[in-house]
Length: 151
Image (cartoon, rainbow, N blue to C red):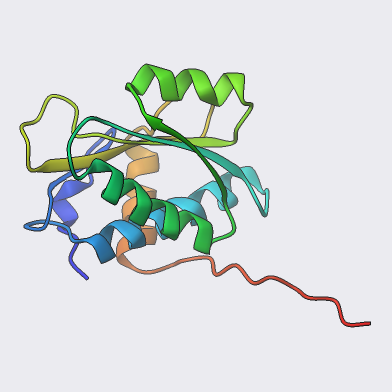
C-alpha cells in the first residue's frame, strides 16, 4: 500500500495517482474516512454520497474509495459523474450523513484527490484532515461486522 502523507492537505487530499498513492491506498483512505464518519456521527451505518470528476481514471478511484467506505459499514450512494457543487447539493437533497467527491480540482491530469465533508454544507477543515490522516496512516480503522441471528 502506498500513501504519501503529504497528500493530506488542510481542506482536502491530493496525490499524483500511482506515484504518491495506489489503489490500495485509496481503499485505505475510504476505510479511514468511513471510520471518521462513524466516530463523528455516532451512526453505525451512515449514508455517504460519492461522485467523481471527468478524469479517465476517477471512476476507478471512486470504486476503491467506495470499497473502503463500505468495509466500515457505510451505505454509499453514487451520483456518478459530477461537479463538486452537485455532490454538496445531493447531501442536502438526499439527506446523507457525509460526502466524498473524487477530484483533483484544477490540477493537471495524473492527479487525483478527494474532497470530503461530514457536516452539511462544509468540507473538512484542517483539524478534520489531521484526524483523517492519523486514522488512515495509523490504521485506526473501524471494522464492520454483520451480526447474523441464529434461530
